[in-house]
Image 1: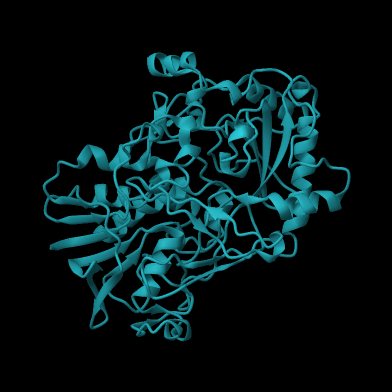
Image 2: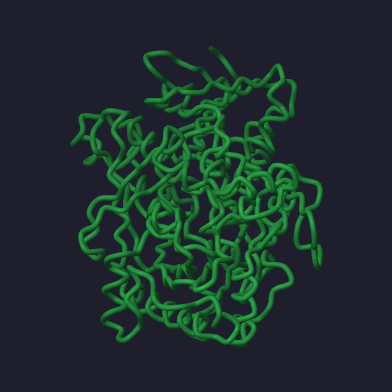
Length: 517
């Protein structure tokens, strides 16, 4: 099989890139995805996303034992399906701040330079104060259709504490509070597969190959000429582009002989291009929950009723439209910081262990998740073996940064103030386990170590830069290998002060222009 471009990974960036490159009828594009179709109804119903975790649509990764987190191995869900993680995430469209992109200090990637790519993708439905969003792109960005009454109370609590109300969350600064804009269309999930790829599947120059695990990039005389899967080759006359994410892209580079020579030698892999930075610079957002019982029957606990299902199917209203993380607030742990380093996410349900605690999901309760947006901790991803089917070793090195634990405790105390605000007094009852209360910093530190989880935002493992030690250059070309690029969140030099779905889409949009020249 021969094509002009071969793209590996049909996720948030890969779907965008395949759709854009195939706009040119003079080129042929192959998009290869390890997973399959988004056939289950849970892909459509927003509130159903936790039920997709640990299914065939999920890579179901785990970290190594995290010493600073009581030796726990943390579960990392990642999408193994058309649309990638955009098909099983919480649909929150949160770009980050101006400082995020300016601080990368990479030519072509400042905030003002990437903003048009966000807007090119966006189709804002609802308010668009100041023209923050694009209005004609494929990806619907909607208002919450039916926010829970406790979510409205949370917003009032934020106002009560003096937080700034944001007319639009995705402006240059996100400091303040707002309802979460969501990637939905008329109350159903709108993944990058829905928005970008599905409408163009009929193009004769676009081939989508599913349920195929790529084992390595085929490199001849220093040039990427295709990929290999199951002993078969898919050839690329122009370029191979990896869009396999912060786990998949570095894993595939190493399997292809691109990485730290000593590490590759340990697994008997011949070195094609020594590039020690591959797999390093891993960053992620760590989250810890503050949970309270709710004395009133108003939360998402009773959502699964026939009446609510009929309400969703007929009107696209009710609790099934919820993305769970219905509102957010961004704040600084230190006024001297240039931008927020903490996020508070409100959920009208006890969202414990990724929503996999089924009994907790049936309890009337509320959650404020505290997220560390700018961790000092930096981890790494390495090979477990030379077998492509073996997942890599993921060491996120959580809480190894000097200030991380202290700032999370600060965030918990802010969450407690909100829980105790007048606006939430009829909804925030006693503490709900495993949250122990905030009697002392020591108790809160123990809670963080024993109960924190990922917010699903790993980045940085193929980081971009102007320095020769970076994995990719500012045009996303892998250093020292012609015809090979990486275009996903693994190229981000620093994790953003937001969520990573939006920048993944932006990277896919910008990569298309870089490739087309």
